[in-house]
Image (cartoon, rainbow, N blue to C red; front, side, top):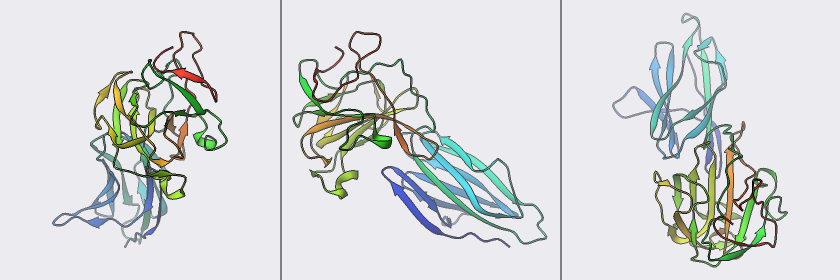
Length: 288
């Protein structure tokens, strides 16, 4: 005999985790449990199951699969399983099977996931464009290490003062993996922290740039589009956790805990070391 047990789930921003009992699909022996755009499928076998992951989003997904309970069971891979599921794919994860079918066995599984590439290594030779036109000059409201909100895993982020409806361009080339522009409200209410219009761009090194607080209807790209540095991606605004119109920009990598850890970046200014914006600086867009 076997048993699987449901436990509470947790979610943060685009990342979700759950410990759940999968349910059979109608007319099928396959069982599926989904959290957002990632699903786990089980194909029952004699004395066990085979696990698959289905990623329905345009971005890679990092996930962890583990078994809090595993009695009289053999697993095909070391646990916990940490892996990256490519965009729009179905990937075999592992198989479990009873060690001794004549004896009782139990198992309970849990999984968690987030958008991005697990432990991506940022290319520190990359130089980013300041993500607006070279004809405009804007002030740095908050730089890396800012005490208002740029600390902890969000340390390496920048806020640029910017009038609403300013054209925002890609700071670095890549692939659009998320574009949200249906939110309408901005302010310093806690509930607005996950309601900023945004464009996310995946870079070739697996890191992801975030352009936040775009205006309603302000995304000019769709997931799956390829971009070169300097191409338009959206229009600035004041949505989400924001007290005035500005653009929030950062680049993150997924850490071992599936958290989003921002990474240090430098902007192109004609020097080998590049530019790290400081609070109060007035900067023209593009490459200086």
